Image 1: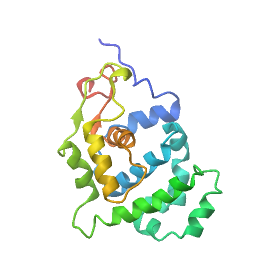
Image 2: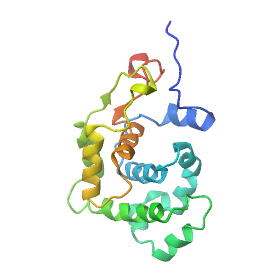
Image 3: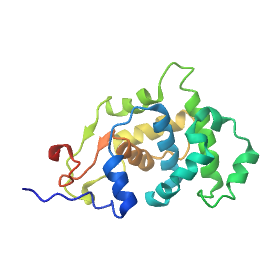
Image 4: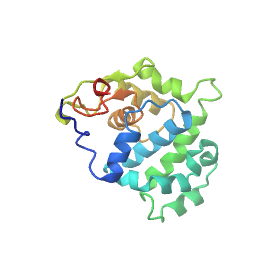
Length: 188
């Protein structure tokens, strides 16, 4: 029997639970996709574990990532959040969540779902990769570059191609579980 190991980036109880229960599982829910693109933007320049540890507090402060409610947040409310140690206190990142909510809400009047838009970058099917080591996993791809460009054009911020690729991995648009990970489809 082959020796299987969890992807090497998943160290520690919280990371392992995230890896095993969330990361790489296809998501089609508009609000969860919105939450994740916002949280990935909060990660910029930091490790994901920093955001993961603060995720529940972000949910509390940003109405469980309800775009309608976030879009109505005042500058005063956002400025107050800059004093909250439970969040990443970066003005541009905090304000980006409201800006992204406003952009997200533009999808509804156009009759398009955010999920359909996001999944269109992988032709609406999971891209299964077969990487043997973390060295093989790219930081960005042609698809994440296209997604980044389209999201920026739609008014989103903190959505560079590297952030978009991390988003694509986490929300299951691409499956980057390593070949020796028990969650790679060939091992299930």
